[in-house]
Length: 258
Image (cartoon, rainbow, N blue to C red; front, top):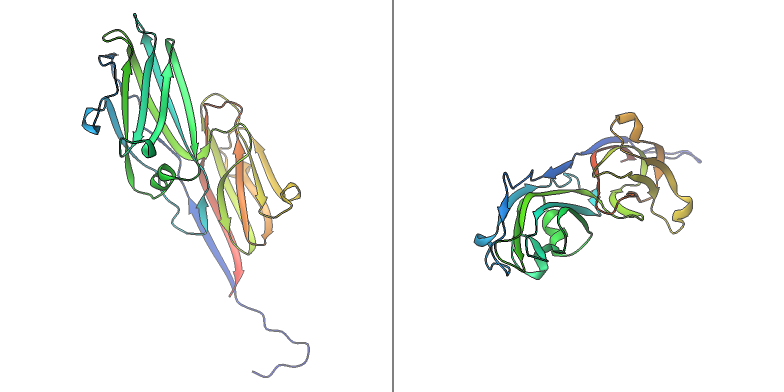
């Protein structure tokens, strides 16, 4: 093709839609009545778990959306201690060993117990981030047999964080114009905060949107149109360390030139 001096070739515009709706996955209350803790040591073998539940957290269908943080939240209610002074609980993912241990609890009082944990790397992160179903196994024991009772056992998981300081949650890898819409929610009682920023060495000046509180309405979580040089992320934190602050839905419209 003959070009005159000063001419340049304009590429074709390409518009793509990336969507991801991880939501929150919930076992529901696994104890429908009241359970007395009989054993005084952790049982051996997954078949001897007190409770088990399978959950599937979806994986982004496009590799340009990358999960950076997964969070799990545990709720147990100790209805009574009797003569016991300790109630122990361990939760595993798929296998009963240290690498697959998600929670390791030692409670010394009755009542509602909450805990939450982030996974940003390692065995459990890789498992829960692969888009396949995984089974959570719950083991309970106490320092006195036939004394302590529990009446609530529940677990949540999601793409999010329980951190009370900034934690990266999801990343968009793209060079070009981006319109990004994200909805946030939390399992818990606190107040979540989320922020979108471009990944640069000057992150303090690269913020392009910030939200406080749960964001359910599509317009509320809309990020203004921005030019992304390579990567952009949404990170967040919560006001209560036992909350799960998660992304319920995200939609990105991206423009590039072919």
